[in-house]
Amino acid sequence: MKKSILTVLAIITALLMSAQAPSIGKNTEPSKKEAKAKAKKEKKAKVKKVKETDEDYFFRKGKGTVYLFGVSQMLTDSLVFMTNIQQVDSIDIDKKTTTLPYRTELSTQFKEYLEEKRYARKQTSCVFFDSNRKKLSKKFYKIKKRYLDDSTAKIIIIDDEKFHFIHPLDGYMNE
Image (cartoon, rainbow, N blue to C red; front, side):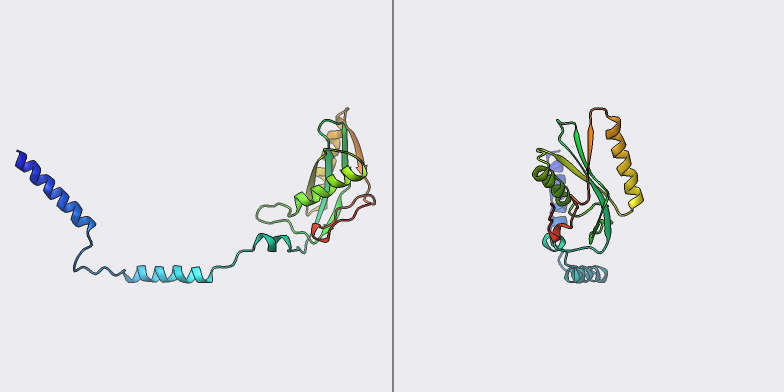
């Protein structure tokens, strides 16, 4: 009985060792399909497109027009500041993610204007945008109505002459 168990174990270990060891006498070169696939991968790696760096993206200007308006509020105050719908050129909405590049910079423009010119501190500002002015005007009136329905909120609309959004790459100069 002991001998049969030992022989079975010896056979199993021999089979395992032969499966792991490289086969002698067999052709170890890859098949033609494998060689073609490997060559194709290497060719793709060489021709791989260079992705745009963050710096290139930041300094790139679009060709489109975007309409936007800003809303800002101090969360512990009843004053709400809103801009009219404004047009900003040379910005394209990202088609894949449908987001606006420089959205944070545009929001910061509005926030800094309020903090410097209106002495409104600790503002939380947001910029709403769309490439279609009609769609954006619906959003504008919906937000405006929401604040008008709230009896505690007071809306202050800021004129275009006092504040206007400017493309962040051009810098911004407001009164």
